[in-house]
Image 1 (tube, one colour):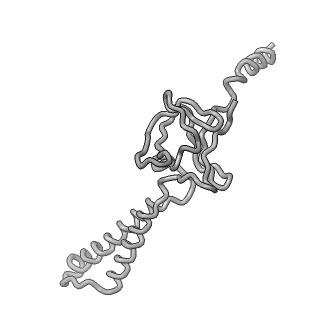
Image 2 (cartoon, one colour):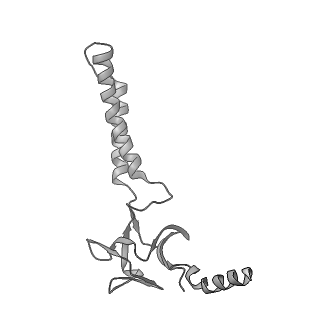
Image 3 (cartoon, helix red, strand yellow):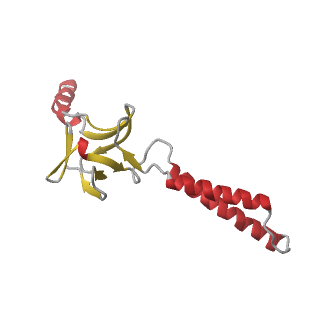
Amino acid sequence: MKFIFIGIIFILGWGSLSAQPQLALLKKDHVVNRFKEGEYIRFQRKGSNEFIRAVITGIHPGYFMLGEDTIYHYQVDRVDVKNKSIQGFKVASIGKALILAGVSLVAIDVFNTLVIRDTSYEMEKGVATASVGMVIAGGLLQIFNNNYFKIGRKRKLASLNLR
């Protein structure tokens, strides 16, 4: 009797166990990130300079819905993934750390010379070179960050797990 009851619950619950449709960002056939119905998405349309932020209300083959608006996949130019966790190499956070390390190196050297050794401060060539190098490298990483997923030949937007 127990097995029949469990079997009936399993059969009746099968429809709710099916996968929820997802909007996936693909890079060379690997899923980089996923959006589900009810999540916010921030994206830019082709030919537009402004970003649109809205809740996904429906995901269908070839398009997704934002309220009553239909957005086709080919209309999307780039997707903002700044607030999504991505399993990949994020250079923006590394850039911030390098800039902070470069500035901290000079501050620690000044503190060490003036307070600890109690002598007048004169910046050494090695400290200046290392500090400027870290700040420049961090600035370049900030410029070339990967917070936007640009749709193109190898980067695609796809609908997955459709019923």
